[in-house]
Length: 365
Picture (cartoon, helix red, strand yellow):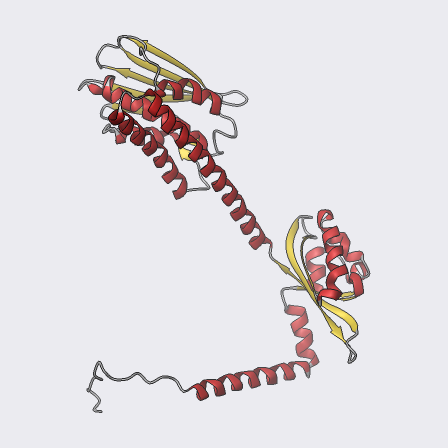
């Protein structure tokens, strides 16, 4: 083939020769065995390996009777080789993990090895870190165990990551159960308070969408809180109202837990949709102000005000108690210990929500 020729599409791709692959693997195994033999034949190399390996090394008789601890052990724990011998090393193991560690040693011979996770005390600050400790026996020609060689590997960061994942999963499961309960309640009460199928479908769709918006925000930042100002702005924007036009939003930063944001989001949805249909936002000159302040107390108290002006005259409280009033006056009180004050003044609706900022309502921020 000439240098500038291009193989045709039908050309067969040549597969690697299996015998060549096998030969390469054999060569690699032989090289590794030779390197291992050279290491074992060089005491200086072995000493260098023992002194520089990051794991904490030790030797032991049966049932964890240590006979030697490495420099790494002393450097991390502050415990000398002499102090670690026998059962002395157990003093470094977290008290809550000692029984499990002893049990692992009792089962080690029958299992052919030792494997246990426990916390070891750090000599510098006295704090504890998670380690995975493993050991294998050295046997004589008859198979009897002469001693154990062990390592302790720092797995603290991995352990914390696993714990956080477990916490997130538990939180997600809890959140899903709560959301499903909320959906069932919304569907049931929407059916009971709607005037017909179309009215039911419209209200149910809007209320489920309000919950969905909160859940979407939670998924984007599961470890963070939901900003109250953004929650208000999103509900108004869905109704076609932008901040600075027909709405004013003002207040200090507040980061809400997902459950609190879900309930408040539903309450804001009811206020916003009512304002668009019947209240201030149904008129061109209508305006809504959503403002809040935090009053120092123990716990702190959030006072949230929703004030409508410039709309049609308000005839008074609604003749029929609907889902929106139930959310504002009952759900907020039941789920968040909030107190809601509604004023159906002729000049426009005012709604004040007084909410204690407990740990289940807000995230630190």
